[in-house]
Image (cartoon, rainbow over the protein chains, first blue to last red):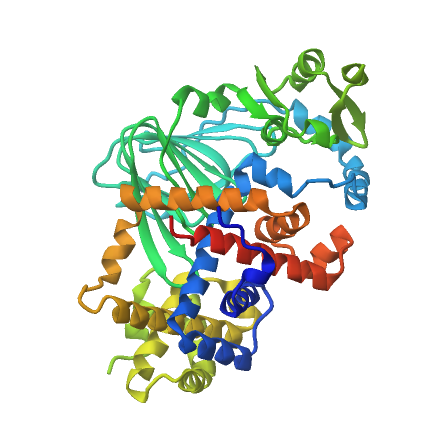
Amino acid sequence: MKNKTDKQFSDAEKQAVEWFLALQSDTHLSETQLIDYANWLKESPEHEDLIARCESSWNLMGLLEDDPEFSAYTHEHLPISESYLSSMTHWSRYAVASLAVLLISLSLIYFDFLPTDELSDNVTYYQTVTGQQQIVNLKDGSVVTLNTATELHIDYSKNTRHVFLERGEALFEVAHNPERLFTVYAGAGEVRALGTKFNVRVRDKQVIVALLEGKVEVETESHNKINTDKVTQTLFPGEQTRFTSQGEITRVEKIDPQLVTQWKNRNLSFTDMPLHEVVEEINRYTTMKLVVADPAIVNKRLSAYFYIDNVDSFLSAIEELFDIKSTQQAGKILLSQSESHNQ
Amino acid sequence: MKSVEENVLNIDSQLTDERRLFFRDLYDKHHVALCRFLKKLGIAEDNMADIAQDVYVRVVRQNDPDKLADAPRSYLYMIATNLYRDIIRRNNRNLVNQHVEFDDEKSATTLTSPEIRSQSEESLERLKQAIRELSPKKRKVLLLQRFHNLTCQEISQDLGIPLRSVQRYLNEALAFCQSRVGEME
């Protein structure tokens, strides 16, 4: 295997990396700098090629953000830092409020939001707070279930059904109507359906679309720095795909439909999942956030199944089974290796 | 010749009047400067109008009000520079495959074909391996910047590493990754 040390990079490679990172940063390059860059590109075909390679590595790297192995590297050898402590005191103020919100459980709200005149344009907003879920029955027979901390607005007109999922997660059960395409806009893409059942989850840097029944088409516009491409992916039942905020669609994955929609029953189940991901998932539903305070257990894998309103049962189970103890401190629940483990 | 509205603003019929005015205003304020910039890039007079128009089309498509509000002219220049890079790339390709007709449209739509997909999966694997082989410091700097969008300044403060070292780590880490991803098997 070739193992390049720093000294072996060519001048062109070094320049390409420098230009690429400069263009990538949020600070604007001056007119002169951009002209210099353009002239450099023109010098040799190799230069553009190297920029393209940097770009493709950079874009690919974006896909790793949700990969626990790689997101964990950003925590590597990180002591419990000052910023962490200051954020705790900040959060302690919310301790009381968070308990109150925990008490809000599933609220089923049935809504008929379309006015009698169905021809008129109509935009309706729906929002759930942390821990809350909401079922919205639409006039056309479609049902949208909002998961925790979700915000969407629905715009129905005579010929179209548009849903804008701003954040969070929702399950769509679309009433069949070939005349009125049902489109969910999320992140850098859109999901088009006629009559189907699918789940869309908006995460920080990516959107996940899972199909349960029927057929949907996912289309994104990828705005990488070179150009704008439209990319389309058709999903079949039992498949899911992800797309990034840059509009790149990743490969299709097989899913277990039961698991994708278990949130509807306020169940969470994890199979062989690293602790930090489990914590991230639970934190979507609770305002009393769990924090992994011990690097030694960040990647500890566990399997669990529990009711989201009963985080305590989860905590006592992991204490028993995985030697992870929890201590409540300043409005957060800190998880660490229990002492008995080291004996 | 068609007006700006016809050419550019109609690409998105859903533009609100407000946005339409906004882009009109952008055009009025920066068009002359943009053309001057394009000239400096070496764009011939004949192509100037077309390329300037492409710049606006991208601006409307990308619809990034923050960047526009922040520094509209720099943003236009940036987009123009990216367009210029496209032109260079196309020329380079034509030099290589003079006999192969290159269809830009086609390459975009076949992006998800199994063949290309497995290719990018392979690249992803190589990238993962490259990241694993980086020293922990370089790796951390690279991923902090990529995942959390931290500036070098912020990383320097967070990790207590001098700014110049952060920049060097970042450069070296990316150089290493791109060389690995681009390697021929």
